[in-house]
Length: 386
Ligand code: FES
Image (cartoon, rainbow, N blue to C red; front, side, top):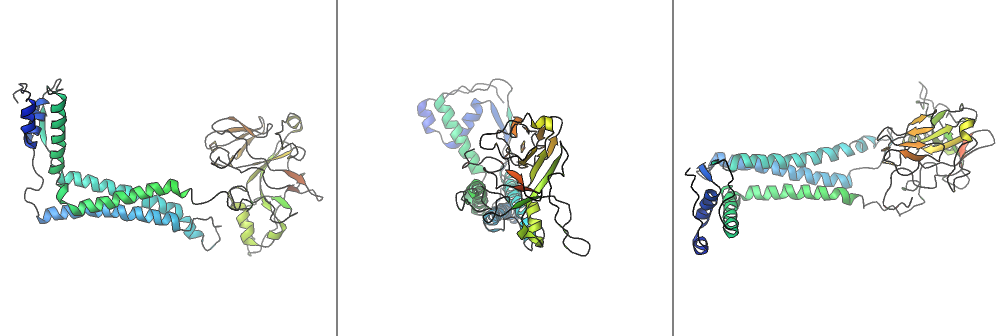
């Protein structure tokens, strides 16, 4: 390297220069000397070169196929919840893993393809640059032209122009991955939350909604076992008003008499995600300090209060109740809700109270729901107002 500052060409000289000359000039102005700039495949069309090309294309192809599989699985794979004893439960259980694996392979395939292409087809140059301020002595126009020439030169040296197999497979891989990425947010528009809003399975209702006028929905425990050793259904354990001690808490699920003897329905009620309710019996001194929410002043029965266990932040189970402070805790992101204050959030990221279930007691002393929640349980979504 000479270390001498090259003379800046005049405008007329610059206009006359071809690409190689511009590249040389750009390097010189930046104080860069190219020691070695070997072409990876000096003899075009050898078997080794074709093999390398096919290898790169295969990875891009794998990426494209996986991206397409992701979109197909997202739309057509059975995604609706199935109870564990359902014949469709296995297919349903594969839904999330399939989405994860296909999207993962699509990203990985594209990454490996790009990496292999860089390794096998892009010249590995050896250059030396003097330490110091090599901002260059050229004008803005010289900088612009030399940079464009260097980019064009680099593009040519990658030989991508004559590798149509790689171009097509990379286009397929990137296109499918783009489609898969776009499908993720678009999929949320497929289900119309306003369609059939009275349906128990819509976003607005839970399993506590009576399925016919006047139907009584009881509170039931999860005893862990539905059947005895002989396969006979065990009696359902319903919650009576004297069952909980003051300061106690129990998780309860809906039960209706029409489910008696129906194994599938009894099992489904225990696993439906918006069913679990935290039934709390406050201590009398605490109950005297309760602040009720407007429109919910008669939702409790005496010292009994029932709140959904679906956290209003992002839907984790708020499964901890601290008797001493009357706080309901969500372990996911540490939101805390005040059970004496209609379960409004007092700490953490949650911003809305837990939905409260209206409850009462029937003539036999069983705790029952007086209807469904009056708002959607769980996290916010665009269409909900509260
Ligand atoms: S889901 Fe409960 S705090 Fe985040």
